[in-house]
Figure 1 (cartoon, rainbow, N blue to C red):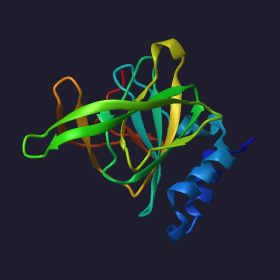
Figure 2: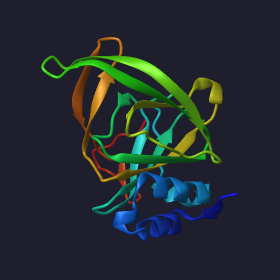
Figure 3: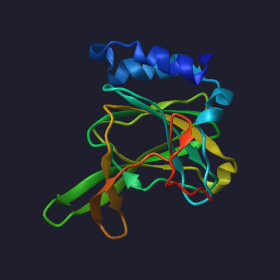
Figure 4: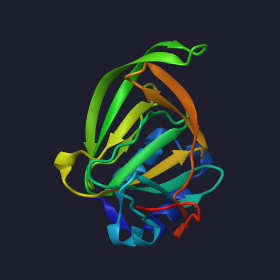
Length: 193
């Protein structure tokens, strides 16, 4: 049974892990042993009917922690994390992660073929890490789950762009990333539906 912590205590303990020990295995063990009390996330959460939201909770040179809010039926685009590690916990609701293998990548044309591989569900009892050997994935709050979800993502190191993949077109391209809110304050340019 995981020890339940406020998000502030959770981040403080995560930040206490020395940089040399901030490994895939060490942080995954931390997530397995420490859950986030859902009610403590409230100041950081902004939902939108239009798209899932990315809400920055903490950031330093080693990692950033984000609360991602998912309405029923929302999904991320298929994406990577620029070679950075990613860990995910789901204190509220349930989410599906679908992984993909990239084949026939042609950087000159921005073309590739995606092959779905394994998929798994995350919920308050099951945290996960992105496999660095197969880092392309999609996160989905399926209609059948029938409830909002909140996931807490830890990225090491922080990054501000990623590659987005289109299975239908067989293409990929770069996109810049932004936060819906930072430290509990909605960014002025955001329009929540």
